Length: 433
Ligand SMILES: *Cc1c(COP(=O)(O)O)cnc(C)c1O
Image (cartoon, rainbow, N blue to C red; front, top):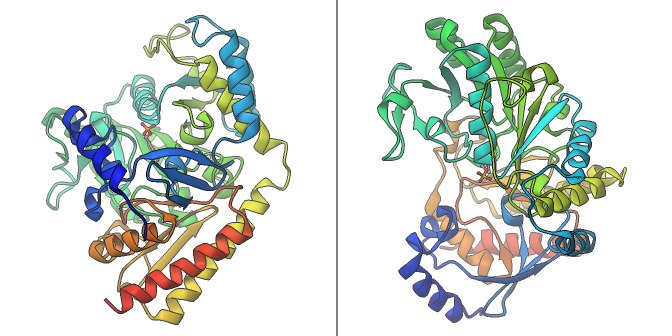
């Protein structure tokens, strides 16, 4: 049995000086009723806590660690870069090289601006869309997450499209009135919004493969219809690929589903484990940004040399391996098919959704999870028990039912087989609860 005594002590110390003891809420493990483990180190597919417990990691820092932790090439490049300096506040070749690489891997990006987080990327993309179209409103989807910017911390009001409300204190009602909340995989809800507000809508922002309510598989037709209605109303389509960019394919979800967005937002993998975000699109659109154009956006540490180096090394390692995504897909199929087999064998009510190397095991009586409403049928108490059992047995998962799990290229067949076995034991444990 694992001991967590050092983590328990560390958390009680942290909670005195850090709100909730954590610098991002989901890390607190509150939704699964656990004390978080404090991390000491991570290598490859493994993460180690300060009590000396080791786990196979399926969080991967919430997505960035697609090569596994402390990849030797990334660490070497970082050490070399740090010798040259850590920030200059002036242009560097590292930034141009990074932008060229992103444009070469994502063909619908011709010009790209680097920022420091996914939140900054979506916030800036929305400003660009509003400044360009000279319109105020944005459509987002219930259950999709785009960072903690005010315009996106909005929930659907009770019933009518007209009544969006803030879902955090501190977000103003006047901000909420410009965000329209629609339903993912339900084009009618989008169509209704355009019927009501068509001429005022600057953009649709969407996670083309939602991961932040757990993985939901998009209908390709739905994504296509988003593209079409944006064209009809001259609104912009923003694909928030902070999670899916370089995750589900080299060119992201837009490559997988063959849809051309106007603006793409990126983060997570492009930082290779350092804090980075980016947004890009056609050059004529991006040139509306300051200093070329009038729409202001800036950042003291944007394009930071260390962040560019970690990102560049990660992306070029992916690009230089022509089998990268096939290998990752094979690992992912092996794991998820194993989990689905376990569901059948144990008879536990669950559904496992997967796109590429992202997946979610939903505990639900529903036969499929295709919408936010389906997601809401999940049994979070069951997930909490599953989480704790898995952690006690060396499997590190997100401490919430409504998250994606990530497989890295460093997960070996043996790691995956061990995970399938642990998953079977966890499901048997749930069955006998
Ligand atoms: C993680 C995430 C964000 C926010 O990125 P941060 O770096 O946490 O600000 C935005 N959009 C999506 C789709 C994400 O998964």
